[in-house]
Image (cartoon, rainbow, N blue to C red; front, top):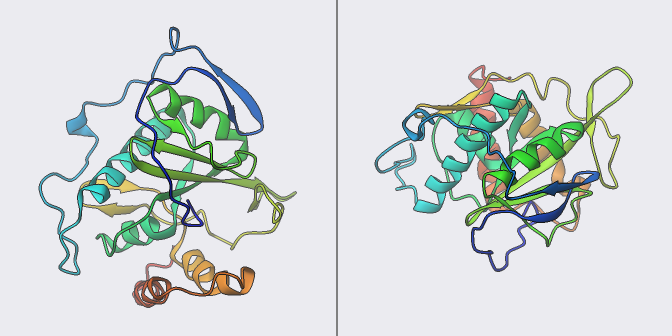
Length: 235
């Protein structure tokens, strides 16, 4: 997902059996699963009608389904008291207030200690695990045909966020990354990482991962993010 992997998308179905989630194995019994009630769809605040981006593009139906998945995560995590933050391209778009380009997937952060509970709630709602991805590194799920990736956050001795898993585990993350004001697209608000952190990640990815040179869309994103940062949206 984060690396742009594609493949066959499984059909949506009720979860059952054992799923390896987070650092433990979560048992879901479909007969006893109690999906967390969500507000009526009219109250999920998903924009209705054609979505037109500020950049003159008609937003496709995949983007609409991605926005619906964001609304679902916001509602489920919020009701359960689980902090989450959008990252990647959708974090940028929610801070800009418009859809700027197509997105392959939807990227989030959550605390590693919350990952099992978040996964259980979403699986109980019919989301499916992406078995192509190592769950020890991050939580990857499907909401129908929408790919959703949740990276884990850890904490250092002072409680500051760090990379929560993988070969970079324990590495400090940008100061203030989790302190941004929520972003908004239409009536839907969602927590995001800060604009400053987004800029740092976009700038540093080619340094951290030389095998992945900066793509044209990353350069375009940096222009938009720097313009946003220059207008005082530095959260």
